[in-house]
Length: 145
Image 1 (cartoon, helix red, strand yellow):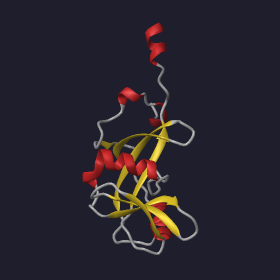
Image 2 (cartoon, rainbow, N blue to C red):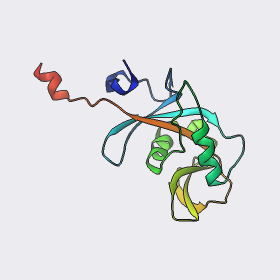
Image 3 (cartoon, rainbow, N blue to C red):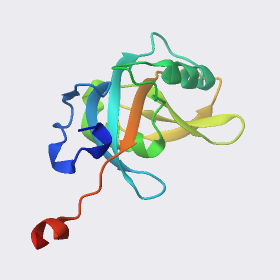
Image 4 (tube, one colour):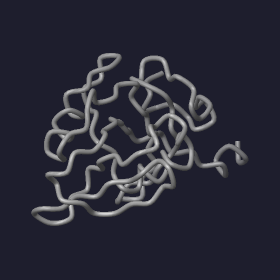
């Protein structure tokens, strides 16, 4: 069974290593189309604080379990990371993938979960995530069987 066809009831526990998926299961997020996506936090951490563009490049270069689709987390994904895996982060500011105009981008602190927009030249921590759409599950179809 591929990960994309994995039914929701078969997901690992939040925070558990997810063999073959490149890291730990961080939870579920909805994307802009309304699709439910599984969020995976890579074990990799940037060696040092980076400006936003270099943090974006670093995250996209992360490879784990043959997956090459990592990125900085979005603002929405970062909220899930804060809620579910805050202890997996240094309690400092981390870059997010969302930019806020030509010179600014969003970041989140993992000491209290605040998000704000900072100049892209600032040097912050970075972590990488990947997400993928899960098979939808219609409970009414299971009852009708």
